[in-house]
Amino acid sequence: MNDVVSRKPGLTGQIKDRLIQQALERKLKQVEGSTLPAAAHSPKPQSAIPEQHYRFSMHPGYQQLRIINDGAARLGVSSPFFKLHDGTAGAATKIAGKRYINYASYNYLDMSGDAEVAQAAKDAIDRYGTSVSASRLVSGERPIHRELEQELAQLYQVDDAITFVSGHAANVSTIGHLFGPRDLVLHDELIHNSVLQGIQLSGARRLPFAHNDWEAVDVILSQQRRNFERVLIVVEGIYSMDGDYPDLPQFVDVKRRHHAFLMVDEAHSLGVMGKRGYGIREHFGLAGKDVDIWMGTLSKSLAGCGGYIAGETALVEHLKFLAPGFLYSVGMPPSVAASALAALRKMKREPERVGLLQARGLYFLEQAKAAGIDTGTSKGLAVIPAIAGSSLKAAKASAELFRHGINVQPILYPAVPEKAARLRFFVSCQHTESEIARTVELLTTVL
Ligand SMILES: Cc1ncc(COP(=O)(O)O)c(C=O)c1O
Image (cartoon, rainbow, N blue to C red; front, side, top):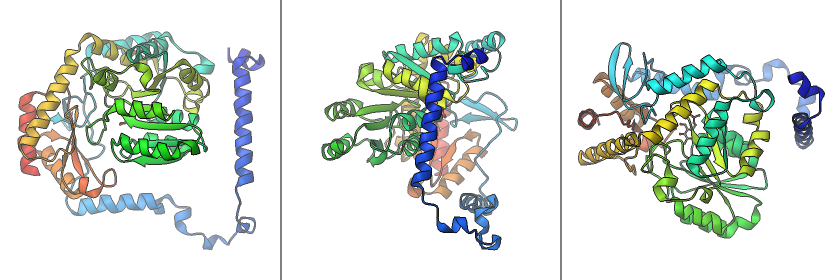
C-alpha cells in the first residue's frame, strides 16, 4: 500500500514533495541567516571548551535540579514526585499498599477505571491491535478515530475536529504551524507551557496579558493590531493552577472587534463546566463559532491520552494535512480513542457525574474558606489551591498530609512564584463530603 503511494505521485506524494521542498528552503534560509563565528573554522584546543558544554551532569538545568532536591533532602522533606500507585488513581488510590484519599489526579468524572470505558478499550485492541503503527495520513485511520472526532465536533457545534496523540503536542503543533514571524500571539500570563512552546516554535511575537484581563487585550490591540498580520488570543477554560476562568464573552467581543483569532484550551473545563460538562461554551451559553480554535485534552475528564482541536473545516483540514505533530507522528492507538469516546458518551448519558463534581468542588471551596485557608481566586470547579506561602511550607504540608492518608501535590517555585507556592487539590465526583471535611480539617492544622 505504501509502495503504491510512493510510486504514484498522488495527493500524498505531492504534499510530501512540497513539505520536503519547504523544509529545505527553511533550512537554507537558516544557514544563510546564521553567522557562524570565525572561531568555528579554526577550532579551539579541546581544553578551552568548558565542561558544561559537553557533560549532561554539568548542564545548568540539571545542576539547579540537584540543588533543589539535595536541599529538600537536607530539610527532611521527602520527594513528592513520581509516587508509585498500585492501581487506578481516582478519588482514592493505593500507594505502597496503603489507601489514600487522592487529590492528585485529573480523573474528574471517575471515567478512568470505569468498567464500560475499559471494555471499550479492550474491544478496540481485539479488533484493531494496540497501535496504528504510523501516521494516519499515510497509513490510514480506523473508524474509531473519526467517530471520536465527529462527536467532539458535535459537542462544540463546529464543523470538525482532529485528535493528536498528546494534549501538549496539540497546542505546540497547532500554534507552531498556524502562526509565524509576522503574527502576534497574546496569551494570559498563566497560560499552560504547551501554548508557550507553540508560540516559540511559531516565531510569532509573544505578549502576555494580566490574568483574565480582557480589557488589557482590547487596549493592546487598539494600539498594535495593524502592526501584525494574524493575531491569536489564547486563554484557558479553567486555569489549572488557580481554578478560575475567563469572562469568555468579553474575549469573544474583543477578538471580533479587532479581527483576531481566539483559542480556548479546555483541558480542565471539559467535563467540569456547564450543566452537562460541555465546557466553558455551555457555561456562558456561547455558540461554537464564537471561538476559532477549541482545544482540549482526552487525558482528564475523558480518561484517555491525547489532545484535540475543534473548529471550522478550513482549520481542521489544514492541520490534518500539514501540522507536523499530526502528519509526522503516529495516530492515536484505537484503544485510547475508544476509551475517550466511551467516556464522552457516558458523560452525556450521566450528567449527574458533572453535577456531583461541581457540588463537591464547591463544598471543598466553602469548607476551606470557612477554615481561613487562602484558596486564591478558585471558583470551586474541580481545581482548588491552598496557598502555603513558600515552597518549603507547601512541600512540608504535602508530606504531612501524606502521612495522614491524603495524597495532594505541592506546586513549588518556579512553577508558581515562591510566595504563591501551594497545595493543589483536584476534586473528583467520587470524593465524599466526609472525605473533604476531614481533608480541610487536617489541612488547617498542617498549614
Ligand atoms: C491547560 C493545559 N493544556 C494542555 C495540557 C497538556 O495536556 P496533556 O497532559 O493531555 O498532554 C495540560 C496538561 O495538564 C493543561 O493543563
